[in-house]
Image 1 (cartoon, rainbow, N blue to C red):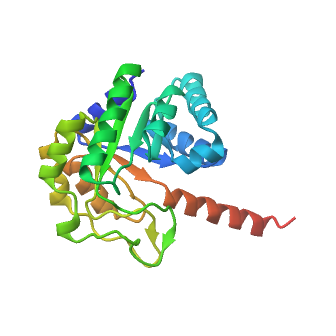
Image 2: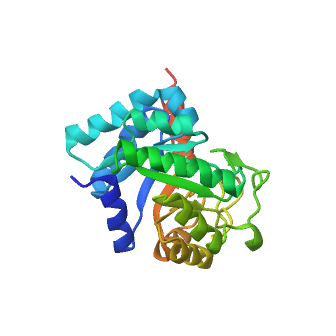
Length: 259
């Protein structure tokens, strides 16, 4: 079976992207896994710090690995949105296939420093572990939003710059980079999320030289997805839409079966 690293490189070479879906419970895990198997595509399960605290970090790894080994299927687990070296180390030590250090709210220099430390530890522990970093703040929540999250600015001058991405990637040797390209975490209540800056994605991918990850995919248009993938995105994150589907399904089931 291919490793996650091989799957990501293959996706990048073929101009496609791997779906990354966050879970908080077993229903979501089975739903995502069964859909991936039906489509015959690799899939990444994400657990943020909060989700890992709820499920159990060791337990989340065991669940995903049991599906991978039991069904001989390329399903992987990623330690999503991790805000310290210690929590990245914990995920690596417990067997995660990938981890994200999210230093988007830090200074550029501090983000580089801790990301590099995470990369070095992963390489030393297991060279197959993938480390991702974030450059540019896009919010934190997985909620239905009335407006753009506080502190997030999506006008062109505030997006991740190609030259910064290149400098960051070279100084950290990170495997994947998640830039701010007009995307936001969460999902706007009224209509679709703002359009992505596809040209900026293309510039960053060419400059940074590593596959890109689109965070905050919930609420983006299908056209934005395909254009972003063509421009250099190799992984797409979805969380809020999974939660919305779960809630709607639960409400409907209880209404139809009140007893």
